[in-house]
Image (cartoon, rainbow, N blue to C red; front, top):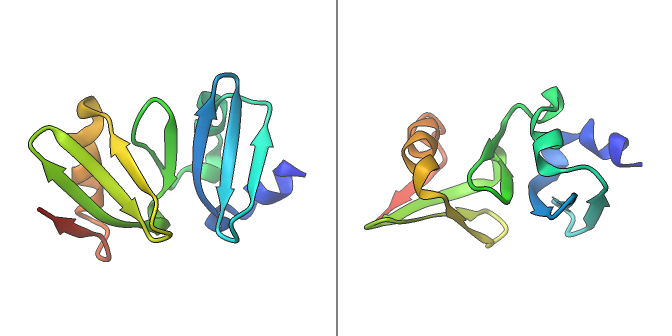
Length: 108
């Protein structure tokens, strides 16, 4: 059943690691549990437009609304209101990628 959802990557807002499982958070608010790791899903070609923002999160670029940096604390805000902390090691690369996404707002 999860394979059906993965073919519709635009319906997935983000994926969250949970030890050796992955939780898929969908646009309609549903949460789907996968028995594969986040690393496994990250390698899936159907999720190529997703960004690995930290050890625990893989986020669909379609749903990133805002990028905010305050000193070393960097966060992205999704269009569904969810907030995700970006890993310090990934923050520069994530910012560079998101600068090419016109709808992403860069707050203070």
